[in-house]
Image 1 (cartoon, one colour):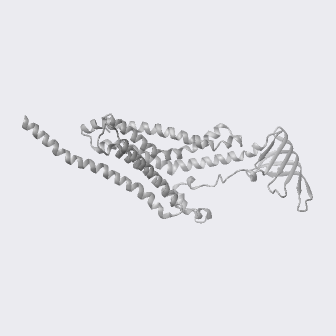
Image 2 (tube, rainbow, N blue to C red):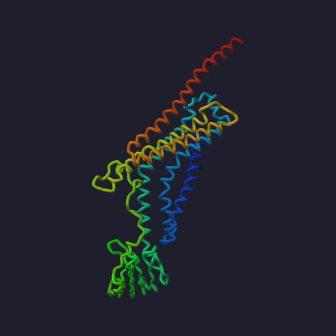
Image 3 (cartoon, rainbow, N blue to C red):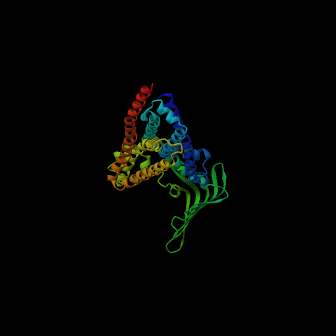
Length: 380
């Protein structure tokens, strides 16, 4: 690239980095607020909390990059054009392609990075996040143990321990309301938190279980040792069940035909696969819209507010239609074709409009310049 092209490239790149950084921080803040239960309920460390929030950043950045590229392109080109720097570059002999190429090169780089995030980074980050959340949820067993306090897990379980000595709980009371008609109360002299086949379990010693039967008679059972499984009372929310956003591309296209759930969601997985491949094209689409918005018309010292407003509405419309096509493709596989047609047709149309106008102007301007030179020669 020439010095002028490098200048244009880094101007837009700096604006993209600032916009993506600012929007990503806001998005991560909003996402982080939904994860505060990890600290409030599960007593997790701040490090775990920020780790889980940061694992969601690749997907957020990828989603914001096309919009940021449009805003950065319009802002940078408008400022440069109003300062007459584009006019000077054209006067120096730079063609429309040479002026637009730095922004398009940046758009291609963003598209490649976006594709890499969609194909590899996002699935890895999403899987790591779900595994971390699952581990944090498993610590709910430890969160229930607060000596001297009554703790609850919703309306199903109430737990109390008088004290904790060297890892052993003493004076344990458990009220199990899983079956509200026949609740169960358990008293135990002591208890210890252990893992049985990877499941958090309270091993109760010298325990008494009390439950009302169908005749409203109190049934009392005594146990020397009684394992009380805590995994049934945890908020798992299918943390370890891989969703469409967690799968790699080959897993989306080639589903397990023996898996009932994957067969049921086959259309959704296919839509996600096409979305992964088509959304990077939006970076080039947004860059072309920004270029046409500022450089697609005649120079004006009054600015390009009208063209920019129309282009902004067009950019938002493209994003909305693309998102609508992605959503519709989950129910109708034929809509996957629209996910490809929309960005490719817009790129072709905008490229034709921008570059064909340059050729047309060139064919008109050359005769005028020749006549001027001829007249100058005659006067001389």
